[in-house]
Amino acid sequence: MSNHQNTTENKQGLRKDIREYIEKRVELFVITTSEQISLMIAHSFQRFLGFLILAFGIFFLWLAFGFYLGELIENFGAGFAISSLPLLILGFIIFNHKSKRLTEKIQAGLMAKVLENFNSQENESEENNGSDST
Image (cartoon, rainbow, N blue to C red; front, top):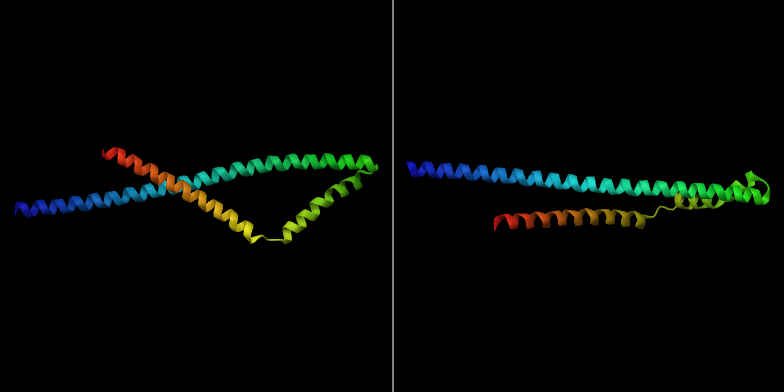
């Protein structure tokens, strides 16, 4: 009777350990995934901020170019109209040309970065587990 009771307790303990292990792995996966997402958001925000600052710099440079052209031809309206033509043409070309290759390249880059970060986190986790068991 005692042997059967010990076996039952061992099975219940093993089930409890397996359930706890699975819960911990799920928690680790959720934490790792949320970390990767937050890292991507942080990098995206940093790039967006850099792009915004660059865009303001280019805007003011173009504004100065408009004033300069206006002074040269002695008509500020015409100077701004001439300086805006390249931007209008470029904007029209970009608006009408949807580059599937560019979209795929950006998407592939993001996915590669996520997988790279996930693999590095997994390798670090395996190294930490390996050092704990010895």
